[in-house]
Amino acid sequence: MLKNMLTSAVFAGVAVGLIAALLQFWLVTPLLLQGEMYESGTVVHFATDGSTQSSPQRPNLLEEPSRHLMTIGFNMVAWTGFAFFLVAGYAWFERRGGEMTARLGLIWGLAGFIAVQLAPAIGMPPELPGTVRPEVELRQIWWICTVLCSVGALALLAFGRGALTIIAAFVLFALPHVFGAPELDTFFGVAPPELSSNFATRSLGVSAVGWTILGLIAATLWVRQRDEV
Image 1 (tube, rainbow, N blue to C red):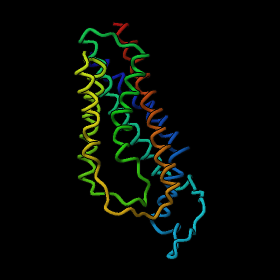
Image 2: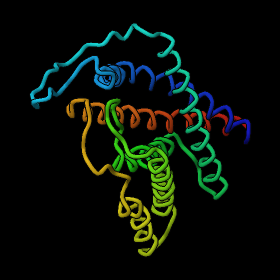
Image 3: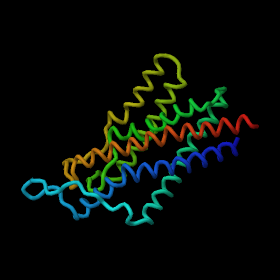
Image 4: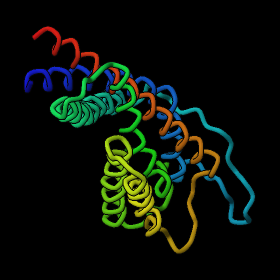
């Protein structure tokens, strides 16, 4: 089983890392580079009188190839880590008497997206460079608590029984949002809000695609190796 977990996680993580990196280059990286222009002051959005000064910029994606290679490598490592958590869940599910399938893997991937990306984004959406943020320690604590609560809530909904379990799941899911994510006392930033909203939307879209494909590929590999034994 350990070999099955290792093989499924590594192959799925590397494959999805490449796919996610390509999607990021296409949809997210241009916005990220534009945000860095505003953050550095190369481009200014608001003048001192409040009038707009900027127009959409077209950054050169061919610059800094080493940075893009690092992005690919980071994606592979990150998605491989996510894949290990998924296949560990597959193993636990089958030890409880369940039977993993590719279709179930896709659902598990969507659940991973909800817990790790979508639920934290309710309070802390993906932020463009040039966006002022609260203290990183507070944001990290809230993010971890939100992920743990969301995973617990989804597990209760999937494997629990009875009305009380469903109520407990919704309470657990809502708990970090009731306390609320860390916020600034004043709203301010240097990047256009339209750019920030596009960045958040596209980042979540890429994550949704990545998690869905990750669950599907990891489960397909898991089932194939299990059936060969």
